Length: 419
Image (cartoon, rainbow, N blue to C red):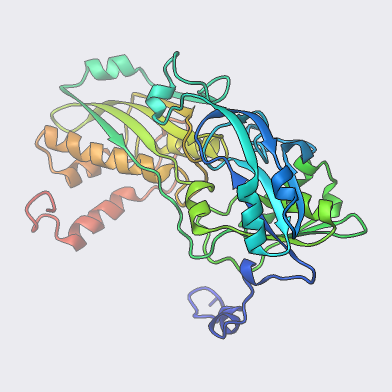
């Protein structure tokens, strides 16, 4: 028997956690440390004309201010280099960073950030991804559709022609903020030897190190990213936010610089779960056989792609559901808007698609007067089936699981539909 599997083992950090000795981002401090505040756009869409930092720099206690002109390479992103460290020529959502301030106290840093003057020309904004797809919509970037995927399996028109009934529905999901108890926190120190150390509350320190290397034009051998204990993440601490800003301020001042997000910044300047608009169309015979399913997914990327393309890929793979469907067509679009940036969150695109295809499957079953559980058991995938993506399943046990669920839940006793 394994000494680990199935055993109750103490966590290595348990004693530190319960005695309050674990160090989180807010707890990290260094001698001579400065405090950072970021001036954000506060408007959704505008042409950035001028950033005047003179009033901020004149405030006693302000040790340094940085803007886009201080960034060696002002673009980063997982699949698209479309996100600036600080806005340079255009504001694309209210959380865009405009400037960073380092001061001897948090109060002075906050005062200085507010003293920065921003001259801009406001532009029409678009917040609905369906509207953003129209040719005459305001352009967040040159093209509002950075990604379009299509999956085709079988003959969709033939499948619908064979159906006795066709059911069409529209589903939507909303923005979801991670609301981890601990806000983002960072401390950067560029030491006299030219090495940069960043303590930051991220789930993927190597990704942050890679992005820092790109935007600062530094070799990774001179960058060290450390993660203290993290008070919740759920995907919301998956990528770089303002680490480059505190690093630039440390380079400029020669001192450690620390930034802790406010709760307001967590809601306005960090990533969220992507809202999806999903259109489902299914053809079915009266005996419960699914003949065709067509799906269209529109994902609201927000102002930048971030992890939107990767997330949409996962939704695309699962969009038809775990059902045997001979004819499938799925289209998926990632669309820029002037909303918050969509990023990683638990489930990674699948919760949105799963919600839609299971609700829709219920509707299809009831449209032909069939019990939804029986309908699922009739159509669920089994070993040897091929998914629309071309994957052949091995060791699929969904049919066994559904039978056990039906029995254990008393589905039939509850009235035939489980309600």
